[in-house]
Length: 217
Image (cartoon, rainbow, N blue to C red; front, side, top):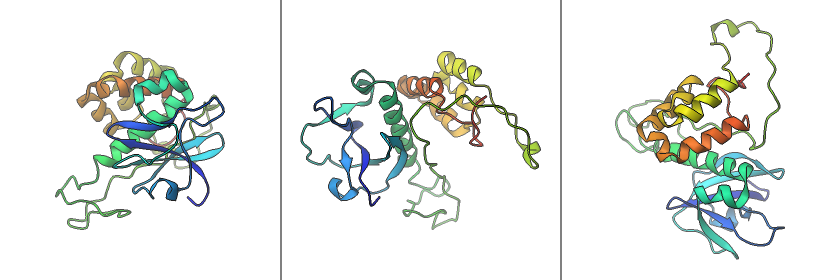
């Protein structure tokens, strides 16, 4: 994080955006020190060739033309690509927030610790998100030694249809093998519809992989 990057900063379920002229970026650009050195920073992809990070903050830094914007409004203000990136950042921040405590004993995790310091239970890992840009159509690849134990690759069109019609129940995430995300969507009714909408866009732009990290075919 020694080079300028885009930052998706969230405070009280709103994201910091820049409402300037058409030439300015939608999210603030700068170094971590420009934004108060946020903790628990997550890489969420790339935007305009630069790394994009997400972080939860207690209050937004003072930035000219900066505004607190609800996630839903970003779709109309900035388009599908920016909305998909913001949605990915929101999902990862929610995942990190809900896994700060050990699910076995309730002890708060220490930053960068892979295991609970009290009972030794492995800590769930938040995976880095791929760049927020449409991926090329995936081509089936020949099986390599060791692939026999893996389930077959999931189909893109099926995942998209499940997301559209059954996304609020998490069926699409169960289909791709993301059981934890599927349960989360099921219990929150697709994040009250917002999460379900984000996932539809992610599937439509081919930004989702299966649980093994393989592209949908």
